[in-house]
Length: 144
Image 1 (cartoon, rainbow, N blue to C red):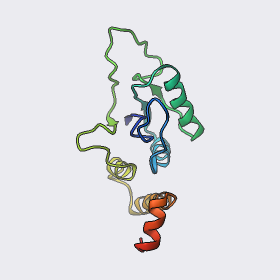
Image 2: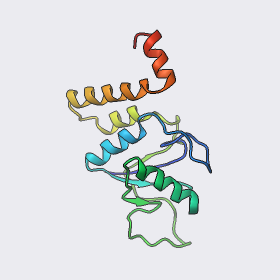
Image 3: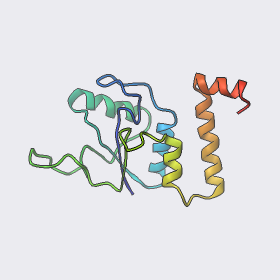
Image 4: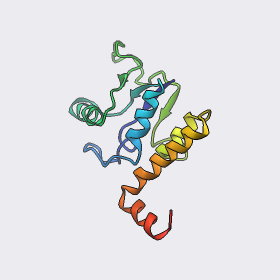
């Protein structure tokens, strides 16, 4: 599948034009989707230096996008074209109902995953969640 992913509010917390804090399990999920053969497009309002900073931020965390703000890398963009890319799925914090979270996104895309794959993903998600202060406190006081 071709998956278009927003940056601000989706991969990172919304702090535009600065880069916000990484969302829990964003890069683990994106890497898993790439490993499964999905093509990822960075689809963001950012341009210029802010866009370059977002691309570099993702590259440093192991994500290389198939294309950025276009359907394929060779696509020529001009003022007469729509900025909407051709993708099978759009992952964005502005979805109806809001951003569902990276764990839920992985499960939705991987409906056909085996029980062992799903269990492994959930274990990794819980481990990532415990790395946050809130998740750590929940693990201690709520026996999660």
